[in-house]
Length: 256
Picture 1 (cartoon, rainbow, N blue to C red):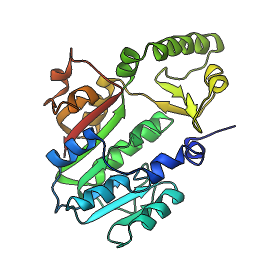
Picture 2: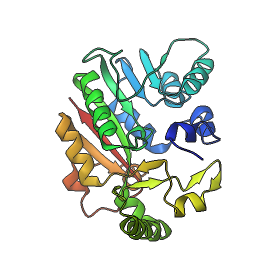
Picture 3: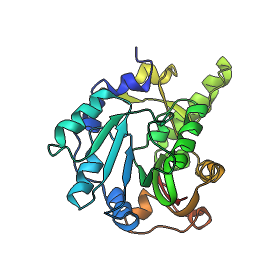
Picture 4: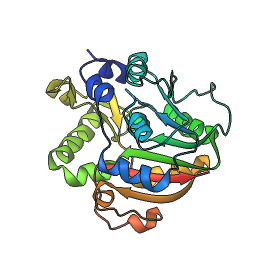
């Protein structure tokens, strides 16, 4: 039985993170509009180095990436045949290997902050991201969006309603935004999902993202979901996103 998200990624879920190639439309939009090629850039949760290897082709240099799985980092190093990107094994909650204000740009675009299973770890990761970003620097974030998933997937909304009832019956004090992996190893995990067995993925509410980013000190300069970014649209603040259609991904651009 799977126990942690690390074990999930060591199954066949590992493959797309380690071997995936190319940028999705939303990533390309953010990287091209908000980051500069010459600035010192770090990617958190780099996996097999997909994003860093792609932006290297775009002319970015002085690149760094970390992930908590050695398997991912080894795969990233294998792909970077020139050895020009610094790939290291670190945990997003403990980045003491990096000095304060070490990076001019940081990339948190692979939902790394949604894969942490407890509130304390997520808050630590936010604080570490803020600490290592230089003053005036730019941070790109992506989050799994709770409201967007509920609105766009009727079966998921039914499943969440079922979980609420089950957790009330069992007196389980778990946020309804913390949802078990429904799919793993390319198979739907019906029994695991129905029994509410972990590991879980955390789906952020839109207001929660805004509050957490501001709490640790970030200044929000742009926000949008899949629906907006795929059309080349992004808003200046969360208020402008209100009453707009949401999707399961939320993207936020911040400065320090």
